Image (cartoon, rainbow, N blue to C red; front, side, top):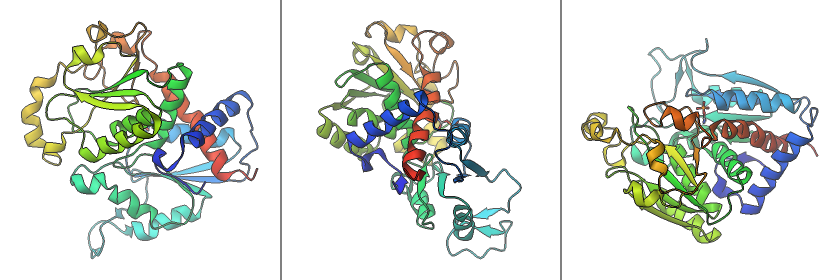
Length: 333
Ligand code: CP
């Protein structure tokens, strides 16, 4: 495997193979599988789980990691093309990224959405530019429009819950004070559709996911036999729901214009998932979220602290599926 950028680049059987390997490596550890291998981790945006789960995954397989982020005492990084660098930034990504990549056998890159240009972010322009600078195998650790490692972990979590194809997954928008990227909702929607689930995107008016995101998921559903719909009605959408996946995202309509989005937002604080949401849901309906999550904003404490929540299992699965990914990408066997 030369790169891991999008679940759409893999067949369902290849994805299942990775998940099977993740379970195998958990049950039968291989602490020397990646002895002598180094994974470079470049974080251009913040992280807790992704950073630590990759470090832990690599260490459990006998390999090593190093981390680079702008918060460290590195030279200020410039990313604009054709710029005269007479400001504060002393180094351009065009040199920095290939140098960082050259010190490892593979590189993980996180470059979350800038939230300025919808077209640029939907096209994943920054991530594509970064990966065009390197020849090393690479892993998308979250880009403007994708979070494939999260989706692989979530697929495994759905398997662990014994949720099968055609089970109903609701991807619900939740309130958040900031306009967040489309990466997680887009990746989750595509993953659930590709897994063959009946997925409904539940969101208030003004928060429909971009057409290109919906279309990609519909295409995945057409391959798998799943379905993709959308609604703004919580009560009817939650009927018979087996898993609700909460996420917050910006309004595509006001993308890059926070002030305009803020004007429509105050009415939407009721989009905080709480027990009454589950009145019509299937018994044992589960709650998923990629984390970090704002308590009392996106979801009530009693949901996160109660039996519905599987967020910790999801986070642990990040490490397990990434072990499988690294094994597949870097082991000689
Ligand atoms: N879910 C996720 O990617 O978490 P971090 O942002 O903490 O890495």
